Image (cartoon, rainbow, N blue to C red; front, side, top):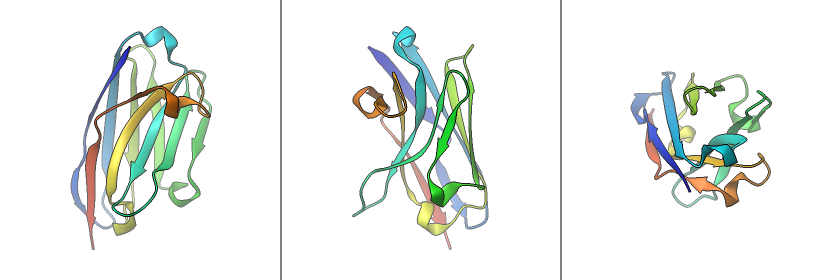
Length: 119
């Protein structure tokens, strides 16, 4: 069992920045990939960004150049720095962890943190 605790969401104006954090605990030996999914009302869940323990990253096209994912393996924590936020970034952001980026949705999920971007 892996427990994930997110923090850092909130309300921000368009063009602003936020940083999300996700700390993992428990059976962390099973984690290679960590990342963030988001879901906006009425929309499908989508991958925002992910990173492996080796530092390989993947980003959604919609956030490339604006969001940066990073990871502190010693702290078992992943971060998502979000710059130049847009109203369409408004969603619940979920931390996810698993064996690979491709399969981490079958792993562990956090409870989610709300990000709201006002225009």
